[in-house]
Length: 416
Ligand SMILES: Cc1ncc(COP(=O)(O)O)c(C=O)c1O
Image 1 (cartoon, rainbow, N blue to C red):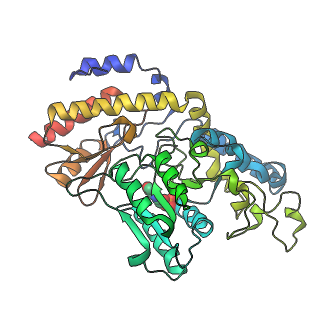
Image 2: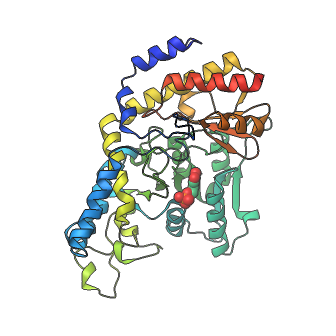
């Protein structure tokens, strides 16, 4: 698409936007002066859709009216309402996806199963600069098994002078590690650079050397096209409070490939993973459900899950094709405007649309001072140490004219 550096052009794009009606389905935050802020922080906390409150109220009403009877009538199966729709979102079968716990908890639970080191095969591969929680989790598993990160943690680093990873280098590392590689766990989209990794190719290489392959999809779910089952990924987990707009601390989704559903390896067990026919017999023997549900531990946090029903309905209505289409256009437009107006800004996110979602990570002269100044002017985005401003226009509620305004505000702030 040929972009133009003009407000009128941005307004025209908004008028022709097939998703324009969705913005009204969300509450848009206001600043202290009562005016709408410019919210570009969908990569951190997605906005609340207007259908969330009635869905939560429904569960509150059931609780008020029925007390514990709601448990057997309704909540025992509540998580099942989120299996098929979440599976569609990540390209999986309904039996491969369940929502439970929080993201880092799930990464830890999945690593209990999918990191099974031996004397010769004990290495875990991750991208350097992965989200710290993932790094802590991975190192804690090495520690649990008595391995030293210095020997067993392989961190992928960009080439000198580059900020993102090349797929060929990732694949070479996997092949070099060969039978020493136990597990790959990488972000689907790196939280800092916004780089989307080629998960299909990485999985293929990882499987060819006999490793388990998993992804932290916190910045990928609802942001980029995913096809986990077809790609033969072993496991994955994501949060639902970012692009998926399910609210602060909302529970996490996990994926476990069907081929592992008759699992006899290690896992941490709990009664919600127990065969549903016998769960309430309260017997001592664990007989796991032969789907991803076998990895559940506790009963579902219904009030935390209800908002996700709202977003899953919207995502189902819109579909990832339309989401990705707008995302590429909107982020491409931001990139174009930044390059036209502010060539001194270094966009460290890849410019190939297949290697990113909607986030751009900007290294700006003036760094944090500029970030603080634009925040005072009503822009909500975020700063990540040591030197990046992350901006992520969300296809469901952001507009091209906001992208235009954002660049103008940055421009005027830098020029003083
Ligand atoms: C990539 C990534 N992984 C893990 C986490 C941690 O999530 P939680 O606090 O839900 O465990 C985050 C949080 O923002 C994240 O961005």
